[in-house]
Image (cartoon, rainbow, N blue to C red; front, top):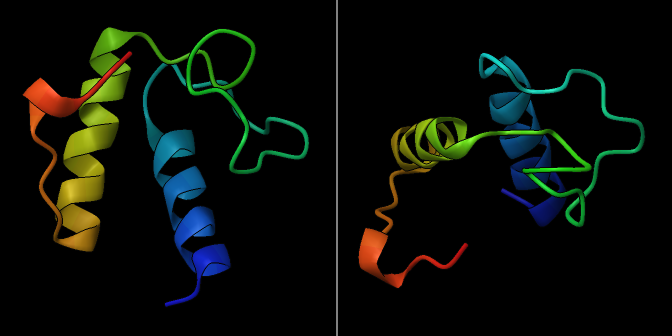
Length: 67
């Protein structure tokens, strides 16, 4: 899977989350997940992490994540 395909999958996951801004113009790898971008709150960020873990088969260690 290419980086562009992964990015498209992540953007699609974000846009499915309740409370996420839909149709962010020109969403790309630099689009903020919080204020000024998709406007995810803390619960939305956790939901995105879980969705990425399930979709891509990865694990995020909460202790290593930075805001």
